[in-house]
Image (cartoon, rainbow, N blue to C red; front, side, top):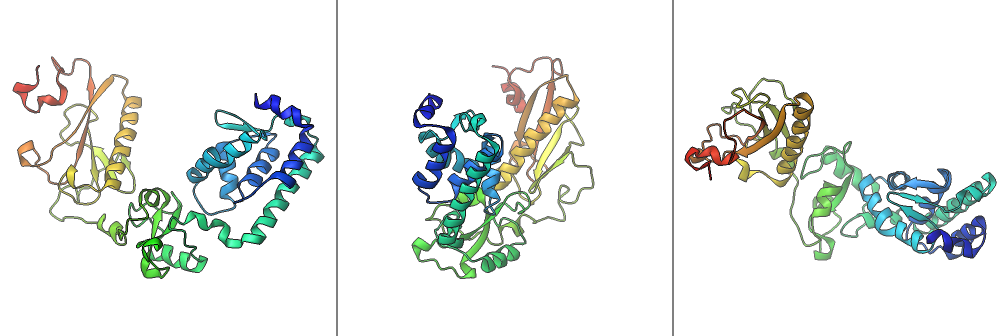
Length: 335
């Protein structure tokens, strides 16, 4: 349907040129960047390709710009019948009708549109990325990230793995200032979860993840890990219920599952899935899993460092598997 509407306006080059130079209303750089990316890529581009092009204009995160493509700029250009969308790919209809010179000329039009917009707005063009709407200068941003050791001060992920943003601890709409004492480094995901009314100071939280107990066997073990991420590790159980029985634990010394911070829960869940996939690849006889954690002496916990059991199950490994984890109280397993 979009292709049919496209033909009513005239030839491809004239329509695109008219839109770029006459009709394009810009509140940001998105539209010309998206169009020049599609033009430069043979008339079509994926959401990720467009997001990467946007990312090259702003130090940010691919996931953020993928959402901007899907929820904002992509909808605008589709609505104006400038591009069409098929699943995750955006196309300029009848791109093949354009000559190389026309493509080059249209790309130049996009560049000129970008240059004019950025000349007018300058660095403030990117201030929308700050959740509390206050623009932070590059020098202050550098100092905040340096102070945080280039890690999110909530979840601890490094800037190499996920782009960091400078967040106001006390939001500006609550009277918070741009002074470095009111700023902290958060990754995009953690910052997105923090509401403008939330004044939680996460500085120093990452240091808490390094907490260890010298008397804890899990804090002082010397064995091979089968998987690891920023906040959790996985290793084989020394007394396996079944072959490949694995324990996933937080790096921080914490007594049980209910004392975990949300980032630790996320990290453990990530490793549970990762180890599960590895076990399925390594042993085709595995047909199921039991997942569980003991919390408290009454539950059977003997090592008071939270640990999640991932136990592979195979057909015939017990006479009757019915009830699964209900077997923690043998008389109650059957039902």
